Image 1 (cartoon, one colour):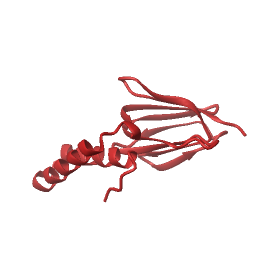
Image 2 (cartoon, rainbow, N blue to C red):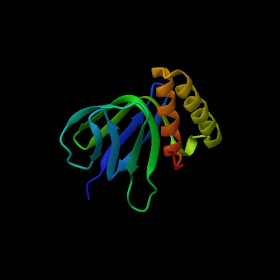
Image 3 (cartoon, rainbow, N blue to C red):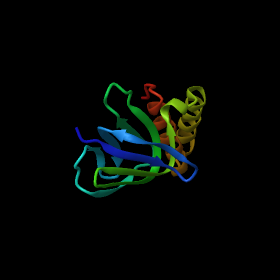
Image 4 (cartoon, helix red, strand yellow):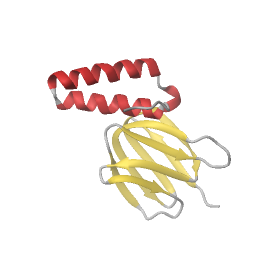
Length: 134
């Protein structure tokens, strides 16, 4: 079976690269699933989205919180260029829950766009870590 070559990078570092059966990402146009032989495309990633890389072969899925950036697909190669990204396995759940609580309180008190973005980021980090988020 054909595989995708996947690379996930942020300005700070290469987050992950390898082969996968499928990539699922949330773009401004909606959630998209990419499999081998996908039509070439360019997408804009949402702030506070979750990226899932299905590796197949019994390997666990790779899950990451992705905060903005771009996704490019061409010739079975998927490039995720994220403004900020964090693997679910790297998320400090206690800190992320604390950040979520602070962001929720701030949104309720201020209703500012920056607070809403912080809320999206905190929720994405917890989802990437496998936590249930309301």
